[in-house]
Structure formats: C-alpha cells, structure tokens
Image (cartoon, rainbow, N blue to C red):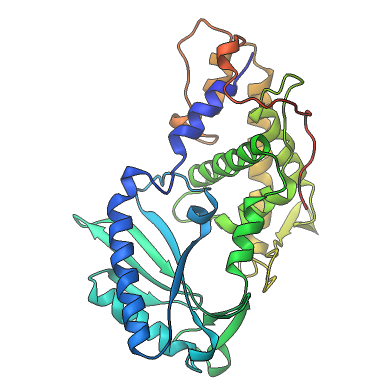
Length: 345
C-alpha cells in the first residue's frame, strides 16, 4: 500500500506559491504601497529603503488559507545612520501610509504595523510591516506602540534574513528539502483544522522551528519518498524534544526559542497554556497516521487522513479498486536515500 501519490496531490492542493494567480491583486497592492514607503521615507531623510519578504512567503512554506485571508510579512529596512532615535516615529509614518491607501484597521503593534484589506466586506489579505534599521548584517527592529512605556519603545536586536536562511534548511539535498517543506505545509494545515477560531493556535514560526529541528526524512532504498513515515517519525521526535517541558501530572509548558537573534521564546506569553494541548493533539495525530499506515489499501488509509481532525477534505480519497503499489504512484523519488535518517539541529 503506497500513499505517496495522495500526499503529493495534497501538497499541490494546499501549497501557495509566491507566483500564484490568487495573489496577483495582493502583489499589486503590496508593490504600490512599497513604492510609497520608499518615497516617503526618503523625503523624511531616512535614506534609501530596502524591502524584502519575511515569513512563509520568503521561505516557500505558505499554504492556502482556509478563511481566504492571505497573510504577508514585508520587512522595511532603513540605514542605521539615518534612522530616527524613536522607532515610533517610523511606525506612525507607516501607519499614515497604510491609512492613506485605504486599508482597514491599520494599527501599530509592538513588532510591526499591520493593516487589513477588505473586498466586498470580507477579509482578502492583511500585511504586516516590521521596520528595521540596519548596518552591515546587524538589524534592529522598531519595537513598541505609541502607548507603550518609554522603556518598551526601543530598537531591538533581530536577524530577519538569518531566520529565513535557517528555515530554508540549505544543508538538505533537493529531495530532502522538498519533503521537509511538505512536512511544514501538512502540519500547518492540520493546525488550522484542529484549532477552532476561538483558540490560540501554535504560531507558524514556532511550529516551523519545531519541524526544522526535529525533521526525520524517509525514503525507500529505491529513493521513493515516504511522507507518511516521515510525518510519524518527525512528530514522534517533536513530542520527545526539550521544547515540551514537563510540569508534572501530564501537563507541559512549551518553550521554542528563535534560532537567530534575539533568541527569544516564541511562545513566551502562551506556552504554559498551549504546551499540554499541542502535545496531546500531536499524539492524537500520530495515532491517526499510524492507523492509516496499518491499512491495506490506499482508499482505507486516505479516508482516515481526510478526516477533519487530520488533513481534511483536501486530502484526496481515490476511487476504490487500486492498492497504490504501482510505479505510477512514485511521485517523489531521489537517486539514493536512507529511511528515517534524522535531520535537524
């Protein structure tokens, strides 16, 4: 019984590329905003602005949002020597630009300036603009809100490009990297389905770090990718890693530090409440994956994986009758591969 063809189809269904036609309007509005930012910041004497993507779009780990609200992170960087002393000055100007462009609910948050774009009264996308000052490879993030205490209005050390590079996992070979990125997309979709809107979801950056640090690849001796085995092994390793700190009585805190400056705990404000829930739900997911792995047909296994608490209806269930063992199902192969070799920091 081989499920790899189903996993490849599932990945293709949920994978959102930067060039996806559904993002054409988003890209256009983002580019027009970026042009205004560069002009206004330069007029204010803050030098030449550089702009680049952060987050899942920068690392090629985006998935199609279930609610249709696309989330984009755009870093705005100015030279260190021309930056104003107060980071709030820059963030107020960024807020004004977004408001002038007609974006809804533009607001200053501690790490960024964010705004929502609506179409026909429904959320279409929202953009987060973190602002940095930079000299050489040293970045500092504009931190704080106008209402923050003075000590919290500051330039805070950061490394946005370093985080993108680390997340990309360049030490893997091409096939291993593709499998790793599929693992991230699969678990992000599971997260979005498993957590209801009223719950605080595990942040994408924290979930990605956990997968990156605990990724276990899986390929047959013939080089055929086995995403199901890779998922099971990776989840098992995540559940056994030091990020889950035992509090006793089967309860866990969740501590996941950024691998780059400022090395802060991603879940600092929510780890205590999130740890136990994530640990238990990952265990439930692993059990469903093991149940699918035990089935003798692709149809039976796919039905388990298409459940709402696993991968949902986007996971394809084929018509009955084939067992998935034909060579046509070998949708992802590598010339040489080891089964279940751990990859991670």
